Length: 360
Length: 125
Image (cartoon, rainbow over all chains, first blue to last red):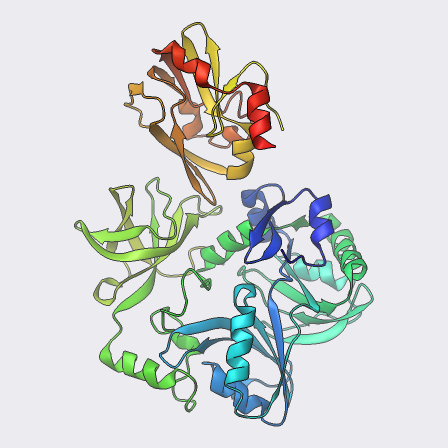
């Protein structure tokens, strides 16, 4: 199993470690609910070093990024970040990703750990622009510092004033180490993601300084369990659950990052066809006041007939009720509609609601 | 890992405390740790009997759901209704406040098949 540079830190903290797509990662340290609330109420730190980083360089770097991703990367000026997706020719999703424009001819693409090899092969295969592609996933560590006190925490140990707009980044020193500081995250809170290279000793030093700086805010380490419940409260898609090679971005509610008018890109022709033919199903947000615990793979029904499937589900630690994402046939995907969770043969009435589940 | 010597255990990570012909059933410290935050214990309030090996309810945690299996045959004497408001007692006190059901043991021979604390410890190792 692969280990991040923080592995010994997690072990010292007695984290519950699991095999997450080949990486030994902390699922929780103390309690998913407590860690979740620490992020919503103050500040928490996630080791997400398993995520991948691919650097794209060359005169045609923008052309390449425009061709392999769905969003319009020409809108990115240096220092800006964009949420995007990569699609197969048939419109199925290869991965969702963050696109960083480092400068005119350099981009950093941040991809899911589960997809690093597949994505990199896909990029290499579709590199008809002669750009340089470097997979630096193993070299980079990544911490996400998230929550209302994230800025106060990081500012203490950063050599520059952290005055970043949402989805922008800069290079600065934190704890004396040069790194990329980006105002991004997967929680819906004010938050930052910091990317840096270095050995375990460097990683541990950064971790310790972040925790020292956040002490007055009762900063907490947060595992992948709470990462999942936090993103689901916001309705953010998770690759492998809500999106994958069988779903197209329009069905998944990712039309806002699918710029069909920007010009041809991988998957665009089939996505346009699917749109014109009418989408067969749509991803919806479901919640219920009944005691129910919908989970991935549970069926959705109306009058005993199966109309869809749950792709993500949990009990929201903030709302203290069931929340879920799932696909239903398009004609039923209307806010306010009642759809049932089919849980061990029992229909439990739920409503389609607008995202996010937890309003900020 | 807390594995009290006075209890008997199942391979499914449950314990039973036997006092005469009554038994109190719960899940082990190991089980609560594996489950993580327990958010709901679903046992039918009208349940009257349980049969060895059969699921008599479910325990819902944030990340997962697990069936509860009867360690032996029994008639239900009491269900721990306090868990409706405080399911987290299963995490904080699995051998005490977090108990699940109290039964009248109807087939005491079945208890001989259960694990001792040492056997259970060995299974976890």
